[in-house]
Each structure stands twice: as C-alpha cells, then as structure tokens.
Image (tube, rainbow, N blue to C red; front, side, top):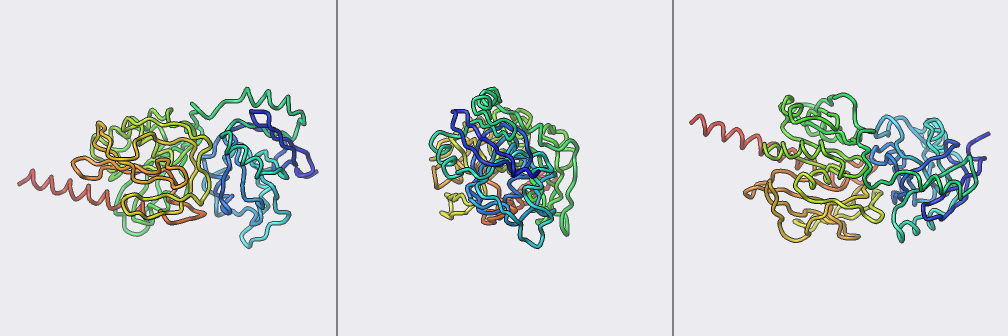
Length: 387
C-alpha cells in the first residue's frame, strides 16, 4: 500500500485542524509550523539543516514535479520535521530525477501530508504566528493529536545546533591558487557555502560548533565564517565566545543567517523571535549604502534587535544596520567598524543560494576583500615595527 493511500491529519497548537492524505512516511511528527514561499528548490530546502525541528508548508501549490536527484542535496539528509504540500506531482519529469519526492521522504522517514488547503494554513500562520504542529497518518483523532502537540517543545529556547553540526573537522580545498584560509563554524552549514568560498580561492576548514579560539588560531586562519543553522540564537554560547575572541584579535568576521544573529549577540545586541519569520527564495532586501535591492533566500524565525538609524556603540567598535527587509523593515545585515575600518559584517540571508537567486553572491567577494585588507594591514604593521 502506498503512503498516499493513507489518510492524515494536521493539528496546530491552537486546535485548527486540516485533513488530507499521507505524503512520504506513514507516522507522526511534531515541530514548529512555518511556511516557505519558494516556487522552486524544494530539494535544497528539505536538506537545509536550518529547518531542523520545523514542519515546512510549501506555499507553491504543485510540488515534486522535478522529482529527487542525487546532486542537489545541501547536506547528507533531509532535516525538516515534516512536509506539507497541496498538490504533489503524480509523476516526476526531469532528466536528473532518480526517484519521486514521495519516495525519498518515505525512505528517510519524513512524515508529511498532502491535499490540504495550504493557502488557508499559510494565512492562518501569517495572522496568528508560527506555532507548534503535529501531523499523523496513524491516528485520526484531532483531540488526541492536539494533546501531543501541546506537550512538544517550542522553538523559543531550542538548542538545535548540536543536532546538525559536524562531529569532526573537514577541509574543502580552494579551486586554483589558495589565497586565504577560512575557519568556517558549522552551525548547520549547507554544502554550497564552502563551495562558493572555494571558488574564490579560499581553503575552507569546516569546524564543529563548539570549536575554540585555539582551534581557529591553529589553522592560521585569515578569516572566521559563521554559517546558517537552526534554533534559538540565545543558546549560542560557544559561538558568541569565539566571535568575541576573533573581534578582540581583529580577525575578519563574516556571518550568515544564524551566524548573523550570533554576530549580533557577540556585540551585545539582543535577538528576538519573529511572528512568523522569513522563508523562501524571493525576499527583497535593501542594501542601505548603495540603495540596491537584492532578491534573497531566507530561512529565519529570529532577528537581531538594534536601532535602524545611526551607529550603535559596542565593546568592539560601532555597529550599523547595513541591510533591511523591504517587507517589514527587519534587520537583515550588520557592519562593525573600529576607527572607521570595517572589521566584520553579517547578513540574515543565504548568499550561497544553490537554488537561486544569486543576487547576493558578491558578499563572498567582499569577505575576500576584507581578508586581503587585513593581511596587508598586518604586513604594513610588521614592516613598521622592523623599521
């Protein structure tokens, strides 16, 4: 019997219930209900470690039409806690497809639901906020499932980085001549991210989330990178401590997504949970200095709380908001300067964006420029001391 022949129910923590058909594995699952607005890139979304603990609702109505291939995974597995779609493709049609989306979800034990009104569900979450949810294709009693939903953990306070980080360091060689050595802290890094850096001559050493300052200095790193990842940024004690060591030492810093939130917290800025967050590959972000708008890929439910106008003093220099989301003015980027010199920067989105868009890929070039400037400055200082 195929999974799609089973009935399934979805119950939100406020009791709203949807009935549909099982999609993927038969079973029960729980997590935070969030919606993603991307029209394409579902394979990259499902394998993004940032979605650990989340039940993802696809707002695009027709999902699975390109099936599942073996090239586009962003990690070694599917990370979403569950998947919700309206109209799954009956037959995949793509020359790279090796199997259907339904088959891959079932093979990896990912419980989903199809055939529900995802537009109504998305509007509900937009009005009332992201909340806990359960999906079951084993029990059709909404009251019983709601009891389990209310007993499941919330995303606020969730420490999930330990679930997704690497258990041992690994190295991605630079393409061509090695120009820089980068220590990349894996908070849930996607495979395309070190690839983008390697394209620019960076040898990337991917380190576990609990890596120490000694681990970074032992590499002779030219820069420190903090990746995307899941959970509440208030739990990132190790990463915040590491960032503060790097900032005191003047090592160039670049963070994305959860790395942006860690950067903010290292500077003494608070973070807070958004009502329903930003997820998808079509989010407009304004770069304030140039007035340029990039269409960007997002997956975040938390944000940094800092005044939008003017610099804010920190123990490490002055920080300013470099980017904002044009939909709601949420902070989407930070820049730290000391004595007028850029020391580190971060953005709240995914500039590597394997499924697109690629508007923000220039940020990896900026990281290279920052490391080059730091190296030149250190060289000049050394020559001055010798003289």
